[in-house]
Length: 297
Image (cartoon, rainbow, N blue to C red):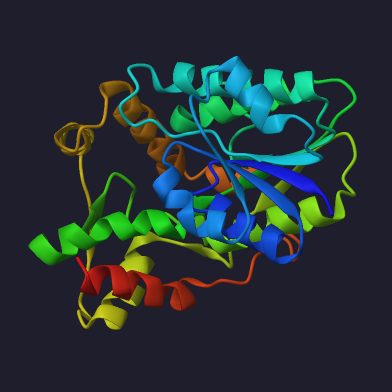
């Protein structure tokens, strides 16, 4: 039996991972900001740590005596400086891991994290990878995942209200999408075996690349709107909508910057798709999740 720490333990990937580890008979510590969201995991036997992720004493307590960890940086859409906020959290977690002598760590990183500029929201993950790679005598696996299928669930209000999907990405530009549960499975496989050595990277790319035009067609058929279309919006329109949602100027601009990487068409050059990094969940399978979100919107 091993003891695992999961930061972001109630999030898209962390919660599923925590459940898998618990079901395999392991001890799991869930680090989160809202203990109510961890109640189900607590009932299954997880130990819940709720506190300030920048507090050294809190993090040292959460990581003390653990065998391995899964690290997900918090996403603060209200942060005045988005990247600096992520780096602060990465630094605090890195220090706790080093202080407590954790020997195995899996991080949730991103496609594009190898670049040191011009990547928007990904830049903080680049800096996280560098920080963790500086820890001596530790084995780190960075999961460079692609765009979450779950991110498309934010399209349901636009479809309900305007009958269309929108975003800053070009409609015909293909990019990889992955289901969160497939990332959880990749993390679980690594943490169960603990057979990775040194500092390494693993890409998690989903079942195939798709464009938003193709996604709209697939979703449209699933929700009974066979002619559903996608429309690209301008930078000003996108930033205005983000501001209306309470997103900070920094976060909105960082997100827009990465979408331009997608629009330039160079994201697929960051990786080579193969059977090892291609995951099973297709967008067609995910339509059941999208349809449920749409029906309950």
